[in-house]
Image (cartoon, rainbow, N blue to C red; front, side, top):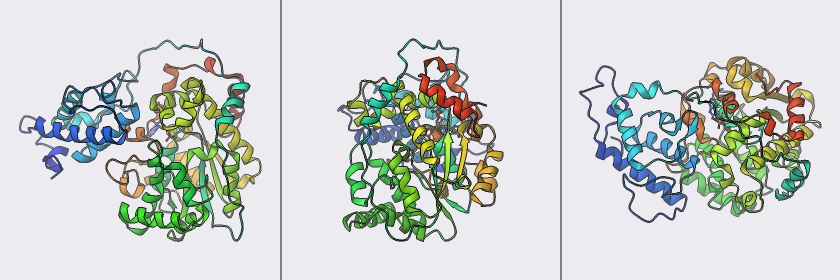
Length: 458
Ligand code: A3P
């Protein structure tokens, strides 16, 4: 039985028994949805104090962001043990809905449980109606980029001494570049171990990392290491957290901690995808200093796709420092994150031998998954495995579940809104944005990428 009393088998539907014979109790579904919403309101420290009911608006009353919406759907699906296909509820005509009541979520869920075939057929993205593009705002200038760069906190990194850790693989990209999808695809290869974002390289010690990330906006970023240890050691979340707390208290360096994970992997290669590494070239250099012949995958995406994705995910809320100290619009911030991250990656790449560097674009990954993965496997010197292009199979071994039900998988929650690799996601931005909105320096970099293997055009 699931928590709210719908037997899992019934919730998932049985071929041939769906239809009039199947009755889903609305009250039971409502109980589950309300419990999930309450848990999330708590997690985001919402100021909403009334009892959650059908009439509660998730944004207007609860203060949800789009990422909380997605988190809610992941949790409801987990509770019910059933794929609901919530993308049809959240996205209409290619845009997020403005708001939803709890009652609407309950009704949608009941409808999908009653007609599970609709969930299977749910389109990942609905073709949007043509929307006029506003290209009248000010373009990002080089002065803006300099001001933005000053907001990025410098990092203290440990001088590298002693023998290096064994080889690891780093996926380098700005956020919202399809890095979660790529990580989960790599996690389908038995020769690789690709956990959620580790957030290790940016800090000298485990304790510094704890101090920096232990706050309401970034606490979930601590979970990638927890999830990795749960997987390698068969531990519960609590056991893994206790172990990590001991490492933090004892002053362990992040490099040693990488070694702790690597020691459990045998011949498997550790893959770390943490998009914030690209915020600073100093952080990227740590990979060369700490690992023997590390391999790098530069993942690119068209800036307009990244900007649109950033705006929709309301990532600024997760980066309060940038939000508080800047007067930039959200799209300008996203453009500068794209630009600064890619510049750092390319500049760092100049010091890395060509045979340890691989470039690929999100556009290539989603439009030609198998050839892209075959080329990547060649680069990583591992055999290709067909599970790589089936990223929604086996969520446990790919670590796409959270540490516990309310915890956010560090990475892209929108991954859960898709049910397969969706090639349309690469060009969806064209309905909303145009390159005319980009600053000159961003366009220059797009042109550079276009003449490289990581071209962001299809
Ligand atoms: P959009 O917001 O444009 O849809 P990251 O993991 O680096 O944050 O990247 C997030 C982007 O990857 C999102 O882009 C998300 O939809 C996309 N993505 C996640 N899973 C996907 C899938 N199965 N197919 C296509 N794109 C996917």
